[in-house]
Amino acid sequence: MYVEVESNPNYGNSVFLRFRELGPARPVGQVRVYDRVSTGEWCRVTGWQNEASAPLCRAVAQPVEDSGAGVVYLVSGGNGGIRLKPLEPDEAWNLENPRQWGEAYLLLADRRDVRFADAPD
Image (cartoon, rainbow, N blue to C red):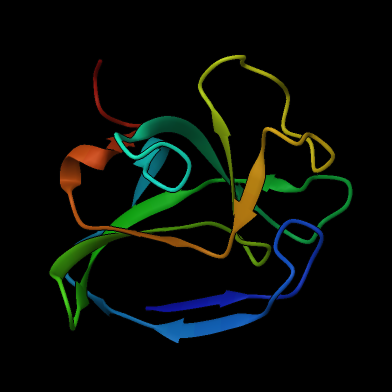
């Protein structure tokens, strides 16, 4: 599997990486990240694409092989990467919102840090 992200307003760098797939990709709606809060913070996630009229696309999580950690979950989106925002307040996706941020992709070591969109509540 390849992850290719072009430099764009959501994520300012270009990325091209290859991963060995270990299972199917599934739509993902929320992830827990530890960048801003050391105990973890649940965030909504969406894919981002370089399409001005429709920048949102589906984000997916897929188990992949990571040489350092074994099996991890790769969270990826469109050619513009992924965009994250805290669960509260639930605001519209917006590149100008300082409470939202873009990433090329995420690698999450713990399956419990992924909430799949197609899983029952």
